[in-house]
Length: 198
Image (cartoon, rainbow, N blue to C red; front, side, top):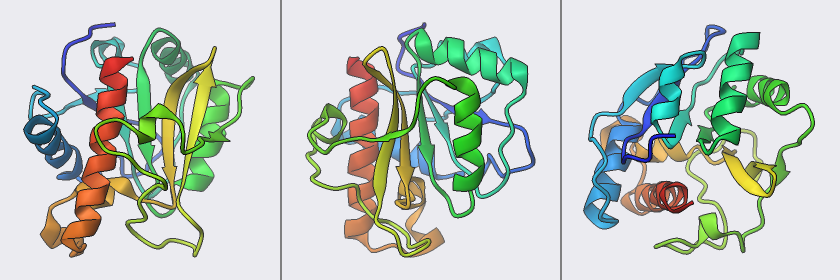
């Protein structure tokens, strides 16, 4: 794994809009660089699931509203990436959940998504959270942070019914109140800080 301060957006197959929320990750990078003293390249790279390029980035961001499909080569590549030190953050845009869960089972058939307790360090980096910020309403359910733990290490964080990446977008896109956007950006900065430390 390359340990430089760069991040990437995961381009996946299946027809879903992997390119959703185009201002989200760049805004999160700016926030992290300004407030958390990171020096991340302000333009995130775009990498395909089966590409060896994913190994150049300590964290991959993923979102979208539609279908996600991992081929056998995608699955093998993502598993190698995650078990060798990589990290995947998935932000649950409306409509993603029913697709992503079954694809994650392909990567780790022996593991299950589990809710991450709020005493976990990912919630207590520079910013401390007692609950996962709720940015947008989907199905009237509470926001939850789910994770996959491989040999005790958190390798995937899935913000469910939270929509963190919508909260990272330009204010004019969703008209989220400043306090809501700030919470989303602080939680996103926590995720980056956690990944870069571990």
